[in-house]
Image (tube, rainbow, N blue to C red; front, side):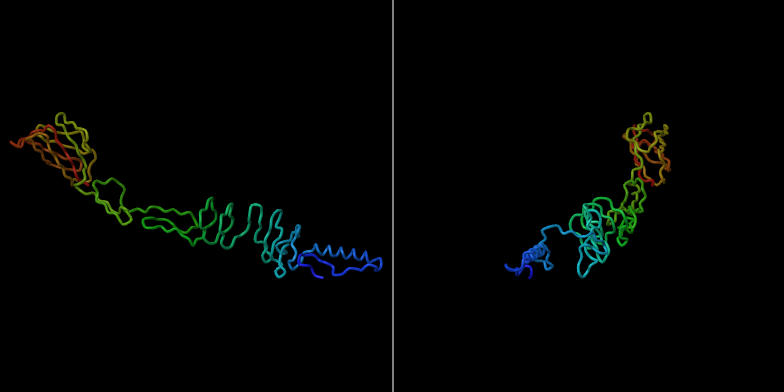
Length: 290
């Protein structure tokens, strides 16, 4: 007397009329059996549950929902409103209203929202928003490229710094510059006499400097012999410099008679007679002196 494929268990025979009076009672008993069997769940999957399947709480060692050939693997009640998963008698994690709590081994595709606590082994592709704590794998390193210093494994905070190029900080005058293939300045050298170190225009009437004088002292010594002694506001590194002089007065020439790191002397003269003569103005430009 099998189930009919829909989970209904039917009697194949009944007690005929005219049998002893206890036949009615027997029939009622059999009907109850048939009704009870119809409410049973078929082990071969014929019937469909129409109500709630209630299981005991279970445990990781003996899950409530398990398998005949592997009774220590399955699902159980981890705690209040928590659905636990057991593998080989051990808890691997549980689901709660906030999501999964436990290790994740393998590939995860999709968005992860919330806190990730534990170790991550493998690659992370995509954006990570938030704060990460813990030690990243030491097998990954930050390598300082050409022109940089620092770096190292990810076991600690690392700083990449711009390495020194060997060029001293300072001001250079019309320098010669060497640049490598990475765009770094590797050498700088002043171009000697091509660098202006001082300039100015002296009005010999009252010996005053006109606007624009650079590194030339306002104190000028001159005499009726046409000799002018100039001082640098800041001394030069050497006396290896050139002074270009000119006057605004026709027939009056000029030339440098002496040089030092602190200043120089210029003499002016009448180009016709060769005697000393002062011009109206005396222009000066100093190059070099490095």
